[in-house]
Length: 468
Image 1 (cartoon, rainbow, N blue to C red):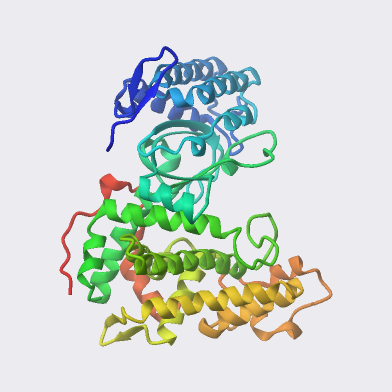
Image 2 (tube, rainbow, N blue to C red):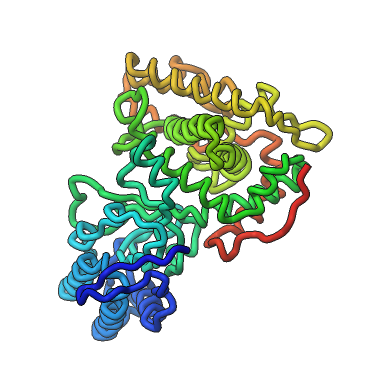
């Protein structure tokens, strides 16, 4: 990693290669945070009347350890000095409140990682927060991370895929809330008294995504007998190469939520919709990244082909089998992609082997993207309920609905006198069950997927796999 020099308040150079996690204050901070986490309620407060509750004096002493550790580590990260000062202030105000529901808005407003996207730059982040796909409670979490912002990515963002809030990041170390399936750091998850007018950053851990992808894809390739072209086999063996693919995929995906012919901001505001609408939105963003990757490959960009197969394999093999079946919109998107490619003979399950037409895969995947884009474009002129039914029609063309579904029976099976949001109650938790293929594959891969909990680059597979 390139050494980066930043200036501290005294004008001396401090290298970001001096790893925060190697400083003795980091394990002290981590241990103190873990102690406090165990005492917190779901909303982040500490109930001193609860059974086995700690003495308030004990919590205050532990919080003093947290503050002291932050103050010792902060000089290693002068670019975060204002944030760390606000953080210490919010920690002390939390103690003064009697450890009520925490409010770290001032610290959040002082943290601006997207304003200084320098490849390899470290950040020490501490907030009361839930971790998406991880811990649902707003406990204190501490994480040390590095920015992933190589020049080639910065150039693409600057000239082609403007996304000023996006932060590609990797883990250095973390507390228990990130020893989970969470691969994001989002400001929306932080405990604050009120939401700020706008969020100024969002981070995605490409090292966890890449390591998880490699482990699950490797198991799927072995289980299904897939013959990989040599360059794709080499990609799956290369953690750094996969991280680059994921950070590019994530950057394009993230911006797509606000780009294109959208029926008024379909996903970025809170609204109640059938879960297949969220599934289509996430898939639209992924397939847009795929489409852009096809263009990049044609232009000679070395990461374009990698992004295509990261999207295909992660969507087809991991997404349908991850999480439970309760309104699993990401799982639904993966099922739809696989079924579409199968319907168009790009993938074939024959003789207990999955065969992939590598030449036609880009063209046909882009066809599905075009179908979803047409649904969105036409949706601008449709009432909401009609748009939902048209989306259901698209999905059910390729995936069999549950036989007990009211939505599958059409509008006559629903009480259309109710507002659309009430009709969401008639959506089954598993409206589009897994096919027999995926039910069988789940038995082979569920354990592998479970083993990716908390994975980072350090836990990524190192085995060699033969290429076709």
